[in-house]
Amino acid sequence: MQNYLLERNDTVLVVVDIQEPFLRNIFERDRVVTNAIKLIEAAKVLGVPIVTTLQYKEKMGDVIPEVAEALPDDDERIDKMTFSCCTEQFNARLSQLGHNTVLLCGVETHVCLNQTALDLIQLGYKVQLAADAVSSRKESDYKIGLEKLRGAGVVITSTEAAIFELLRDAAAPEFRNILRIIK
Image (cartoon, rainbow, N blue to C red; front, side, top):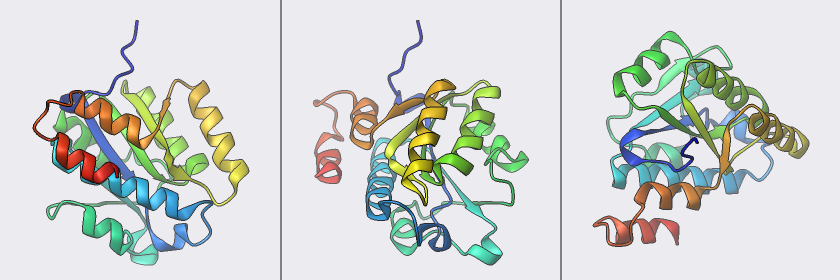
C-alpha cells in the first residue's frame, strides 16, 4: 500500500511559473499567491528543498515580488520554454536532491502543472498537488485539471494538510514558526 503522507526528508516543493502575465486573469489569484507563499515559507522552516520555474523569463519576467521575497536568497530559478517543467536542467536538479516526492504549486493547473505532474509520474516520482495553491484562467480548466491529475495518480491535497504532514509533530521545534505561517 502506498504511503500518501508527505515526508520532509523526501519531498521537494516545486513552484511553477508564478509570473505576472500568467496571474493577471487567474481564477482566485489571491488564494493561489497566499497559499504558495505559505508553502514556500513552511518549506524553508522545515528544510524542504524548493525548485522554482519560470516560463520564458525574457518575455514573461520573474516571479511576482511577493513570491520572490518569500523564496530563499539562493533560489536559482529554472527558465523553460516547454509547458512541462521536466527539462534536462529541472530533472538534473531533482535528481541531485535525491527526493522521491514532489509537491506542486503554481499555475496553470490544466497546462504546466498537468504536463509536469504527468511527466514526473513517468519518471517514477510520487506527485502531490496543493489544490488551493494552484489555478487556471478559467475555473472550469482548473477543475478539469484537478480531475485529470487525480485520475492519473496525483494526490490532491491542501496547503495546510501538506504543511502539517511535513511538520508531523506538535512537539517539533518548528511548530511555533509553522503556526505563524498558517495563521
